[in-house]
Image 1 (cartoon, helix red, strand yellow):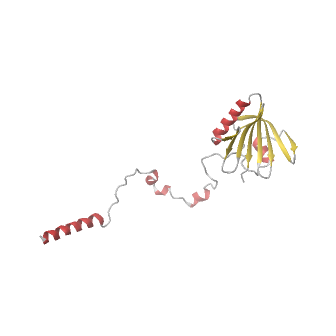
Image 2 (cartoon, rainbow, N blue to C red; image 1 turned 120 degrees about the horizontal axis):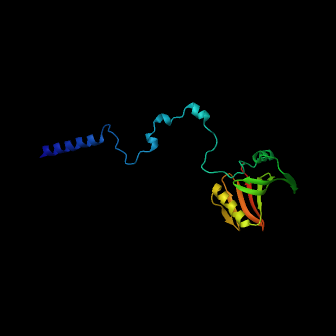
Image 3 (cartoon, rainbow, N blue to C red; image 1 turned 30 degrees about the vertical axis):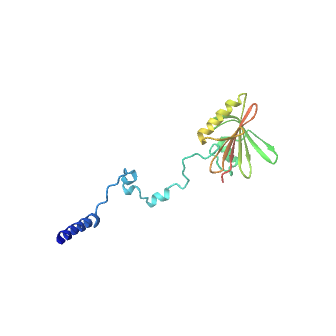
Length: 189
């Protein structure tokens, strides 16, 4: 009986060693293979030439608030004239600021009666106004255009606001019975 028990224990020990020991093939994964595991490794390795020519700009999946490509508070009148494709129609003083105005401007798919630029230390303010009899229609037009570009706004006391992570923002409001104002504030460094 001792011999049978010893033989049985030896068989168990050998079976355990075979099952656990030595190099064995890995068990198949229960998850589906991904494209990264199926891609050849040479496609994943960057060469020095790739690194030197790789873009250094930030990549993201959203649009920063901008006016015709202008995003920074350091934008100048020359930048504005280039974005508009012309010099301002006129300018005037308001307190210590000079306001530069353009008549009949289209931006972000909306036609404005007038666009005014003010350059401050903390931001560039771009006041876009639509004058006419139907302010509700103008509000809807502006709100839909900005929402399509920048997502849903916040709303407080009839003022709609869109913000981005660069500190730029837009406000939309009815100024009076005949005027809607969409104002861009470029605050980004």
